[in-house]
Image (tube, rainbow, N blue to C red):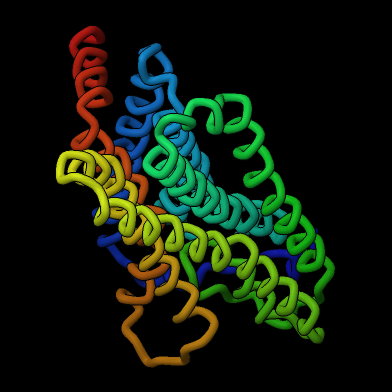
Length: 305
């Protein structure tokens, strides 16, 4: 295979012995992510009382975290221990596709969570007739498959580009960074990228905000007991949403729209936040706020001992 089909990760250069400390930290974080999210999935799967739309969506989020981090951590950890940090164009595009689809799946799941809470609070008597497991399965399938098809087209378009440079200033493959290294006119890819951004992130985010604003209005008109119960189920979702949205907005802003002189460390931290913090924070938030999940997780840990 010709050399031009390989990219070089430049941020791993000259790390010295600190690479071993970073490897240890990364390995521990990845283990924590796997343990927490697997516990969430098992707790919901094994407990029949948790076979409800809200909990199923939480398990989908944990599954998505395992999916996205699997494309990130093993590669980064191997690069930290390797003398040469190179990746083929094909492998780079696959990693980019998985990480991008992880992002779109996360937004889709958060949107479905907001819709689920909106129906539960605005139409409590009809909730089980509207949000059935069959309806939820269809919605998850549609809102996960559509972005993946769009991203597959984007990867196909990128794979046809001729590259003029092979240096990636990231710790993982990012489709927009690959496109910037090409020699050809990338107007079509940029337009398609904005279409994906609007349909898979901006529109879901607007629908999420609309749902929670409507929930807030309903709660203000309801009794204090009803309001307290509604807030108890919505606040964990909002915390997860805020963390994820801020991470993505920071990454997209600094990658696409802003040309700022910033330290390499800050740039790396901003680019990894949604792949490191969110997969750890999400299961902790749900375990701490939903006693049914927490109790089942504790029982499962005791049983394994």
